[in-house]
Amino acid sequence: MQKIFCTALALTLSGCNSVYQRPMGLDDTAKVRFVAAQQKHKHSAMSVYAHTGEGCRAPQKIVGLGGGVLNVGGLAPELGDIGMSKNPVSTYVLGQYFETSVHADKRFHFTIIGEEPGRSCKVSVSFLPAAREEYEVTYVTGQSSCSVSVEKISLQNSSFVKKPEPSSVKLQNACVLLLN
Image 1: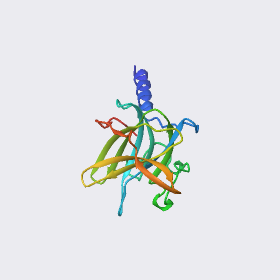
Image 2: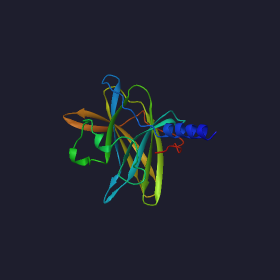
Image 3: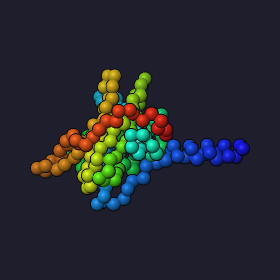
Image 4: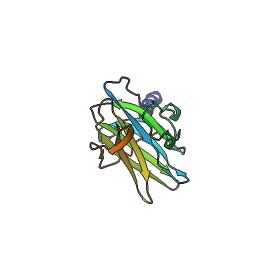
């Protein structure tokens, strides 16, 4: 009986701790950069999870950024530069952003769990990435709230321009059962 219980527990925990696998390919993927909030003299820690639909099924940790207890598991932040557009480059600090690829032309659901001294925040969002496009997801904190913005990055007149992604939707209920 103890062996069955231990096996069931191991399977349950391994399912909770799966790591996001980047899709490989150019024609059927989009690039997404996750950026941790960076305010004067303060950096927020955040963990990013991909999951299936609004039901928060099958969570997969993408990355933990910024230190803190939430920054455990997922892909290593130093592996998170896949050559996305940066203008200006100096605004991106290694360890405060992470780039990955996602499947294009189907909704990408994710949750960001942010951590600051004395509080934590959870925001679940989805959007519809288009093939061969680039997006930036920024986690922003305020005095008593947090939010996530999703912007599409495009090249216009030799400059990179960010515009709000119209397909971005904040999910009504944030996923709360995501584990490291």
